[in-house]
Length: 453
Image (cartoon, rainbow, N blue to C red; front, side, top):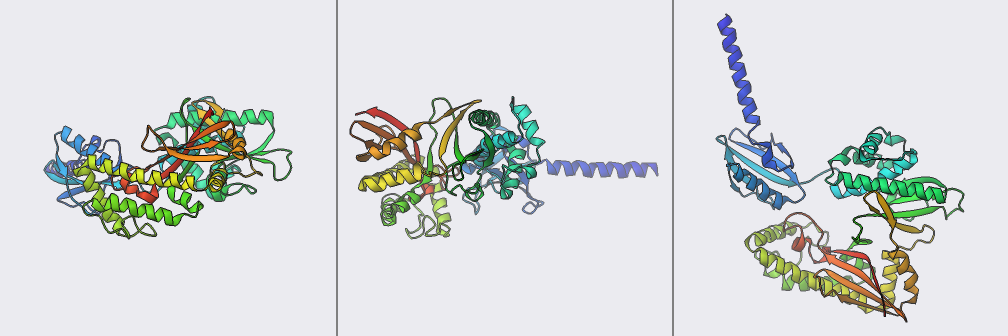
């Protein structure tokens, strides 16, 4: 009987070992730090399927393949229905497939980082807390009952809690926490000059405090005590960076710019030029009607375009990059011509979309540099100068493929607005650069370069 028990125990232990070995099919290091899981739905007795999540799928897929080879694991690029082909291989006599999927659900890191610098100072000020270190600040935030905070709109409570919970997972955690400490110091300094009644987190346009225009550029809003109705708010637009860096003061896309000028026909003409001169020459490219997703951006041809661009980049990266530069120049020339058409319309755009004039809720731009802050004064200089402008000229930068300038002249002064048009999307060659398409490029205003005439 004892021998039988021992035999049964050994059998059970053997099954346990085999189960553990099956679960540990691949070393964790293979996934190069990405979040991943084994898919029970797609795995079988002959092949394990893993899903890794990435914001730069093609590059991370290649890093996984490189890591597998460095560990002596047989692997290669396979083929599948996704725009990023999987990694297929064999380990411990069992086949495996690694699918690299886009990040989905929850808060993306860019949103997380900006939320850290916007939300945390609001919470600290409301709770009358003055942070001294990153560690102490985080410990304080973890103790806060977000549901009770008046600085957070009711519809943003969940996002606020998610920001606190995920902050430590940011790749820029310490940097952004130091920036949040700097902005908290700004709020206390401002309170020393003018008594603050309350502060609010302007997470989205629909959750800005009553009396503030939904399109106001502010990230947080200060309500002062003892002010006349309609004059009690100050919008604070937050920037973060190094001492000598210039952070964008306008982040938009080319389509809304042309829409403002009522120049949608001009934009469509540029789209056609870019297709005729660039996209139509790429193997596997769909027709012009829907190659970029068509009117709603979701036509099935867009996926075919992505596949064609990924294949083109893999086969001829130099050609892909040259074609991106060609498309970029077509669109940069187009937006320059747009601003050169009508001085009054261009001035109206600058005032409305860059300065975001809202007389009832003035705006200040504060830049956090590590644990210190400074006011960005370019905006004030531009606002004062605009009424004196007698001439506007847009032109290409002579040193950059993506930069362009808006030159504003008065009788005795010249100001250059530093502008950029470029791709700003992460991901594969089918999502960024040529994959962002002519009408999807980002447009940014990066501040002023001031000189005498």
